[in-house]
Length: 207
Length: 207
Image (tube, rainbow over all chains, first blue to last red; front, side, top):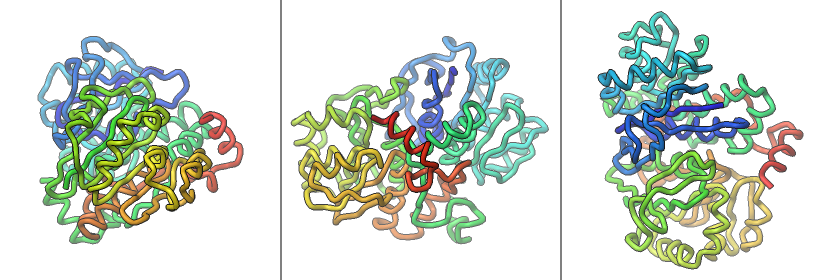
């Protein structure tokens, strides 16, 4: 199983690293962290660089494509070369996936037209501009395109992919291996669950 | 708030990146990814390098120290220079924290003697060898030392830290910002919850 993860400047690290930590435990897997060029890629906080060991010009196919989100999605959506690459990898992929605003990149590549899809809860309107039917579900499967909601949702998406690819036992084994038994101090992880003043606060911060 | 995250060869990326994604949203925060030397650090899968922008020799204090886990913890526990550094940062820290087998490093540095602490569920016996009272709780606070269970638990720990440092509103805001509303396909994230054949399978794989 060959997994290509797109890295780009101003991406959100957890969007990629959450699913990577799950998917890398599929048997016989190879993960290619792929940037427009090889080299360190600065993420959105300015504090962390992830290394792209491959340039997009070196990766012409993958079984799973993962496109993370982050403020840098805007620049990627204007980058014809990267959108061409996304379309090319999608052509031959078994699964084409995104986390958070990574779905806006899939949308800009023309892959979501007429499909149900999701993104970060503050970006639903933008997703609709690409012809997608935006939904608040955490993970949305439409054929081989699988989109996940904000940042941390990539972990749930990846566990679903492991289940689809290798079955229930491995999915549970990976979940237990990474001890994914969430116990956040609050139940405030979605706009339906968080207090309304928190929803407003985050909405303003994300503008 | 100055946060030092120790990077080392064969660490598990999510142990560091989960809490980083949460803690970096504290106001006025600076995160220092710190390795024994500056440069890319290869993580345990062999597929991902995280960049250490600082060498331990360049970081002499931090408000929060975060020590991730991973198979490389064994080499760190034998590295007197790194253990000295951990002790030095701990001296002046507001919080000294670990995720997964990172607590074995805190233990080897002599910081857990007589304290309650946690680690990955397969490594409880090793934790006891360092004089800690090992517990299966997901996050264990003992004064300023906060240890978290396996891999993904660092996200929960970091949300608890944000709550302690900046209050309920910010903790909920960060949770909503990263849309941490977990919906794994199974409820198998702890040895108490997973089917027994899965527990055995993972225990053998982690040997």
